[in-house]
Image 1: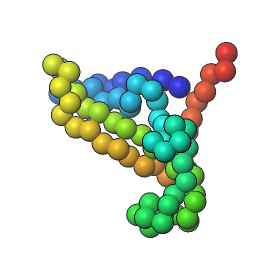
Image 2: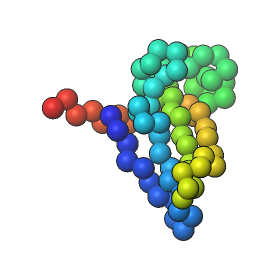
Image 3: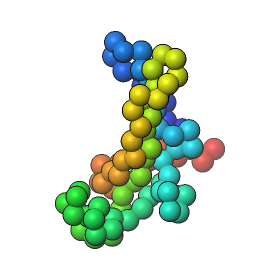
Image 4: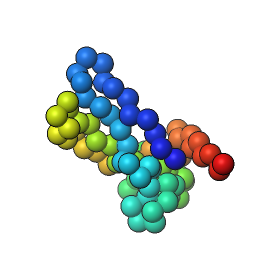
Length: 84
């Protein structure tokens, strides 16, 4: 389930998800469920599906210049899996 890095325009920076793909830190699975805090912040019902992602932006010398742990609403995520 690899995602290709995307070069940021004019900066030489690369934006890419963690090498292992999008994983829920608690379960190791790509999809989680909204707890009360997350549901409130994302304005979604409790236990609605979510996707957890770890993003790192590195400069041309491979130094991390931005790191984020992001929770996406389940209705905003599309997973593409190749079983062959």
